[in-house]
Length: 343
Image 1 (cartoon, rainbow, N blue to C red):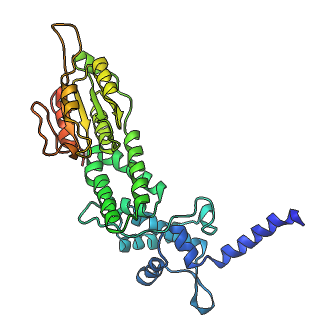
Image 2 (image 1 turned 90 degrees about the vertical axis):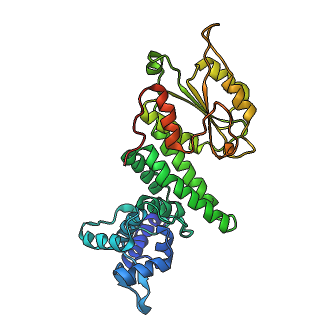
Image 3 (image 1 turned 180 degrees about the vertical axis):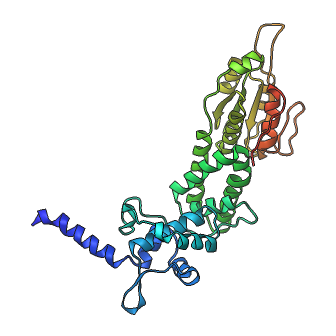
């Protein structure tokens, strides 16, 4: 009898697929609310092919495939009406895949329940698509969209016009909703970091040595854990071919000093997110660090990055206001200015 149980379960699942899934089950699977599904049915005609007694909706595998395509398009920033028109026009080409044939408990079929819209304001269409995917905790779509953004537009535009506005929108939502949406911020931040890392490749010192200049050293000051903006700067410098050494979050003073003496960098950018971590004595110490033989010693230019340094000017140190300015300043150390963004 036990040997027949798997076959019986498959037969039961097949009958369930033919009957269709409920609106609640489909909503959980897609990461949207049941109200959204009913609205798409009423406004755009994306309703179920089967309705049981009492007009209860039952969604077939083909219905599910169409709605998954609808979610994919809206996540990419396509307006719902246009997305629905595209789905309807391509209905004959949409085929339910194996992962679409079952219910929301199928591996890879579940999507987290959408938490709500983010306060984005007037932003690029790609920003809205990224926000929708992040709120649904749809990690595959978030990752794909970020990789596509960097590939199409470059690091600067992707960071300034899509990544940062979406992160700020999550922060505003978090502040106004009693510590909700923290999971959205963590997921989005991790995937942004991953996309920036993928945009970088190790850069040697051959070009810098030929020009008589060392690399750019990037480091967060001791105690500073917020390194995402520094990762964007690193990716932008790599994109421009500028030799860079990235040390990341909370670099101890002794380690930073040792690295500067060993590398002989052209510049050091120190990142501080908050005033409590911005350490002016450290910045002066790094600026005074020297290397080389007596009579031909060198020392680095020091740039102060991040809002923690605001209102604290230091003679001889630059404080670029944004990614584009930092890239322009640092790349100018290695030759004529080059474009730092693509449209």
